[in-house]
Length: 100
Image (tube, rainbow, N blue to C red; front, side):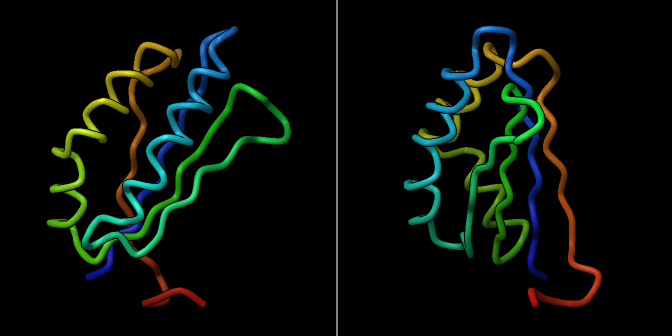
């Protein structure tokens, strides 16, 4: 079953560029991973410190492998020092059975 990931990152004051750079650096290598069906990073229009990632995975095993890869581990190390909350990653499934 396809897995959908929603991740939220709220930058500490003055750390917006650190979070934006970390997100920009992770998207391309993640897109080339086997099992990644798509990934996009977003910045809120209402709060310039708020960022989001939406990704789609073939299954949970593909995402679990992604979490162990060096570029992902480096991303987590880099971004956790720049956000003002615990890491917020939510696993979800579509209600309708697939993208529209």
